[in-house]
Amino acid sequence: MSQSRLDDLFDYTEERCLWQFFSRTWDREENIEGVLGQVARLLTGQEPLRGTPQERLFYADALAMANDVRERFPWASQINHEEIHFLIDGLKSRLVDTVITRSTNRELNHHLY
Image: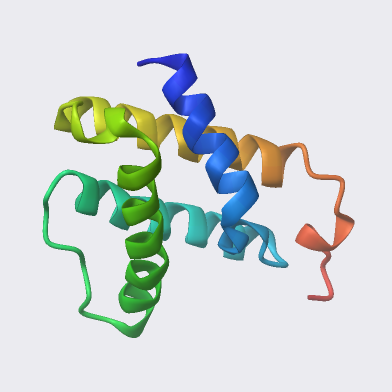
């Protein structure tokens, strides 16, 4: 996996995607997994999941992201499905580390919420 490609995706996501900053840990995890799972499906030509309202919500965010990724990063259309999955998995891990694990926001896991 190319570190510069992962850096590109991470920088884009940090700048443009608000779904990673929901108010609770479980919300952030759910959004990171759901949206990026749909992005991977879209970038690899698979049919996105749209059977539930939650899947449709993830799809809406993923569609904008996948279109932007294709437009901004020429390499996105030149890499194979396996590499796309590696990049998305790397992005998921990096986001979880940044917005959950290393977050100093105490409300993420507050017991009264």
